[in-house]
Length: 116
Ligand SMILES: [Zn+2]
Picture 1: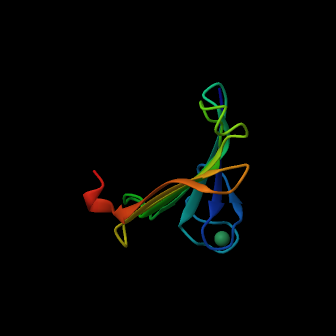
Picture 2 (picture 1 turned 90 degrees about the vertical axis):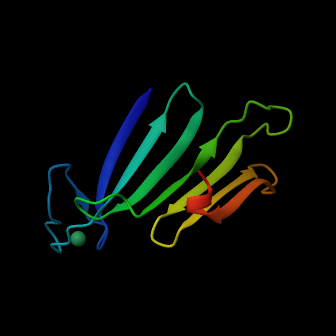
């Protein structure tokens, strides 16, 4: 399993080092974290993007990617997955699409506080 983490300035998209407290280009202190996981668990390129004010819990999270499915007959090319958690607006959204046809096979949208 191979996990790579990348940091970007939330404002100008400048790539940041992990230890950078402020963006060297624009001075912004918000950063996006992008995590790519490739490995045995069948994630074929999934990115998680978080908006996290420093010292606070993240306010928004987006997980987007291409996953292989166990159901090879139904989804021979895997599925496209989009999951959004928005604490600021209290929204939870999960959409799974068949990669081949683009059809939505699973949809789960609702208030975040009722999701747990
Ligand atoms: Zn910047």
